View (cartoon, rainbow, N blue to C red):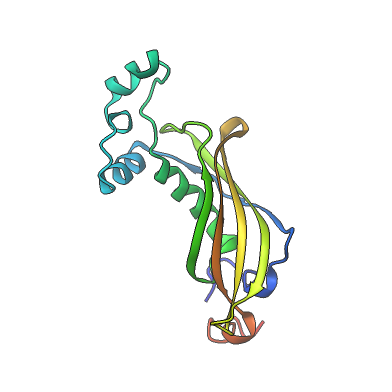
Length: 166
């Protein structure tokens, strides 16, 4: 059953739809450490405070949050509306990280539907491609990209999901 609603099946998406996702998420040092070390990233600016503070002539007062952490949080913020009924990710492209993120920054997200089409392989699902944009407090953009997902069709899945075929 859908956790947050019944309006996120394939049939609910149309090209041009825009979603301003309601939740924000404050990044912690733990988020940054976990992703940095799980991915074996050895760039010290992500986990060594004195190093981060002296690099680039002292441009940063805090450790830089590693890019995959920023991407994961912003894509996660989109999931309630965009991919709660997705079977899988089909791809992500065009990812850019225009500004740094630091622990304590709160991230927000927006999604714009770019493409909606049926799946030749799965009659019970369709393909949705959307552009995600993430920003931090004050509106500074921190990540953008496109995500393509395979989403359940209501006619095949709503009853099984406990949504009564709605």
